[in-house]
Amino acid sequence: MKKIPANHIPDKALARIQAAWKHAPHDLLSLWDMIPFPASKFYQALEALEALQMQAQEWIRKHPNLCVSTLDHLRNLNETIIPIEQFCEKLQMEKSLTRIRQFQRSLQPPTSLHVRVVESEILSIRQTIWEEFSNRQFTFIQTGKTKFFEQESLFGEKVFNRFDRARLDTKEAGNCLAADLNTAAVYHLMRIMEIGLLTLHKTLVRKRPTNPNWSALISDIEKAIRDKDKIQPWTPSWKKQRGFYTECASHFFFFKDKRNRAVHVELPFEHYVPPGGDQALRIFGQVKGFMQHLATKLKQR
Image (cartoon, rainbow, N blue to C red; front, side, top):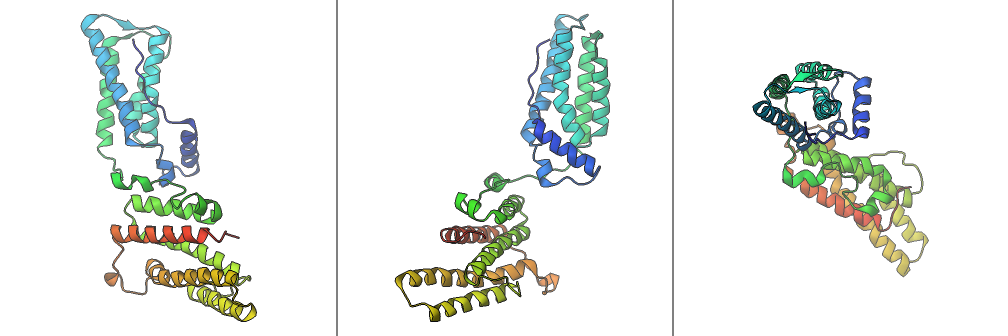
């Protein structure tokens, strides 16, 4: 019997899933845990199983009394089943797993399976998978938003290298945009802005903030700029730096209102209007552009 190729889940991905499962059985898996299960790979594995069934049907027509017994044939059958078993295990499809593992046990040498039995077993496995699959729900990412999904440097290499504390929130903001979780996306974007704000504060004020809220931080920065105006002359060098610092401070003041709307809940819920997809994308572009500008002069300390 000809071997039917199927895409296997990468070993590292499986190890990550298995570790998460052992740590918290039957608990929700994170977005990162679910990433090794793109629909295309599952579909390819199912196609391989269907092709194997069709091949068995062809053998039945040509050789109705054929039995599968050679080690190569048994190994090829098992290798086609393994990816399906892995997917079903992670999707908690218990009935399908029971059918698959019964079939796998029947493939252990020495054995001899009539080709009709092989075809019948594969058909039963496929039917059980589709029965259980119909009870699963999956999230779809729009084609235009896949560019945001699981990207570590959405703001470019310079921001990625200069603001390492912002990496996780940048990635999470992209994932939220991809999943249409717009309020959550803005929340992560404001966390990125806060990292930039703290970096600017540390650069100019050079001491730990006593009150880490945005208004106090911005006031400290503006005071530090005024103090420098008094201490050092208005040289061309300081004039250029001053323009950069005052521009950044004004941008943070602009973003403060967006940040407050994303993280505070003073308004009654019925009056809260969550950001739409276009608005979240616009804020993403604004934060991206500003962080790229900030990265031209500053680096997280």
